[in-house]
Length: 387
Image 1: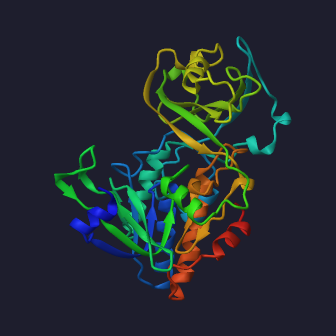
Image 2 (image 1 turned 45 degrees about the vertical axis):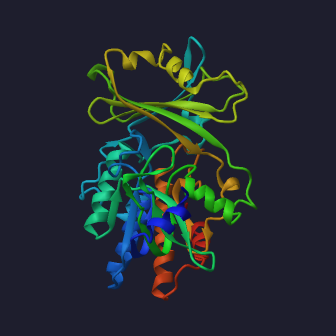
Image 3 (image 1 turned 120 degrees about the vertical axis):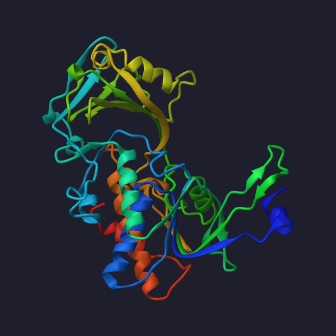
């Protein structure tokens, strides 16, 4: 049975109304929720904000081990250090290494562009940081619903986005309902922000429906594979950042790898491979395993143990591939839009800043008693920002 048939037989769905609904509890979505509440407090207003997170808890679907430029966080929480934000390991040393199959050489910093510098940045567990953001959001009065994925976009009679609906529960694999069947819930909003991450399924629907990419270059993607290791104390160099290029990828394949030393004997190691590779036999996972056996890399992990692993899509097209980020009733933020800065190998600061910009514009619209229209000031705010 499709959604229309289910609604006709079992409907209507329960509904909750909010001023602002945010789909995705990552850095972008939580920063948007936090900043909206901060503005409301500053202006003495009441505003209802909801965040939907598909993971079992905030941070559950975030891959740990990242480098963060704290510029956006400084704006969101100027006193984040005294608040206990888990940015515990400042970058102490940067290395860029070119690998051949059996040897390596370090590229002098004088030959590298400024975008490779990590001075003033921090190595952190992004999942722990996201959990911390979630706690800050809840303290400000944001409703966070973990374990609920937004499955459907809601539209009003004028074709504008007016919220989302969560997925139905208790449906057999053949499509028939079970005794535990329960309709999803509607979360209606004056404005809806989509922060699902790279290739978000609702974001893709919005881009298609409103033709948001009609003036953009085709988007390009990569796959990022990451592991978190606990290494021996002798192998751990807190604050060390290593980026590598070359082997095991050939000259026709875009990509690179990294090692970040942080925390208590923790090392995040990963590889990014552009999905435009032409060799049909190339396996990014297998290339990553070979990478860890290189003579310059292997000693770091000898005697250690892998704690966690995962992979995710990476939106790498940059400004030329950025779609229009607004549509009637909402906006795309973070990697749902494609704000990752591939040249800097960073996206969390861009996610935070884009969420703040969208929240600021949405709050301005709400103060004018607007709803479900186009937040046209959001693209302008992005262009006028440091982002």
